[in-house]
Length: 261
Image (tube, rainbow, N blue to C red):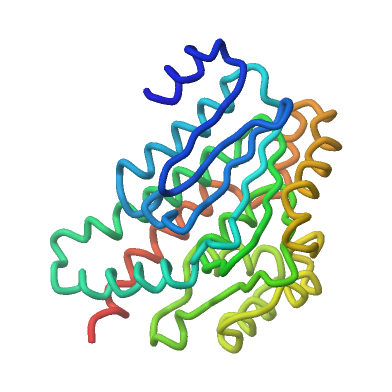
């Protein structure tokens, strides 16, 4: 794969990847992945999914990286990209025998969650821009989350006449309980970083220009913990990955019935 060859050519000294969907650079012994405006392609195309999954595997196997930061840039348009996904899903109701768009999307979600669940190093997430429901749900599978004062968390499903995002529904119910999760999903088409902090779903709210450095500072504290301890702690505190996958599978199977008009 391209990323592996790149690292070999650089004698495993650093990672420096740039494309339309994400970038990755190395700070000392930590990797920083930044999701860009075109990040939708990472979950809705097979090539995009393989690129980010390959990068995660390359970082894991590098032998010299001890921690990972996943950043969503201030230009990240999670709200627009998520609505595009919902509209494309609705269009697919006319082609029930195919549904390739939805199948690719569900596969990307579950594969990412599987890898992260057993990842042998700490992962800190920095949230900026407009964070869509599935991106927020995926961040809840990471170890620690930091947001900026201007970060917006959006949840447009109910207003569009659609059931909620399956992974977000699952992780909100797991983290907050059924009652609070139901309240948020039914009554909050969007909420601020301060509201998210008050709910205990993120750890800090910082200035935009401080986001990456704050994430790296926290990650440096965590890199002293053995990787296996991190992975086992994550398995103990996170919901069972098999349960998560079953929930997502069953939710996507039911969704076409809701989408037919």
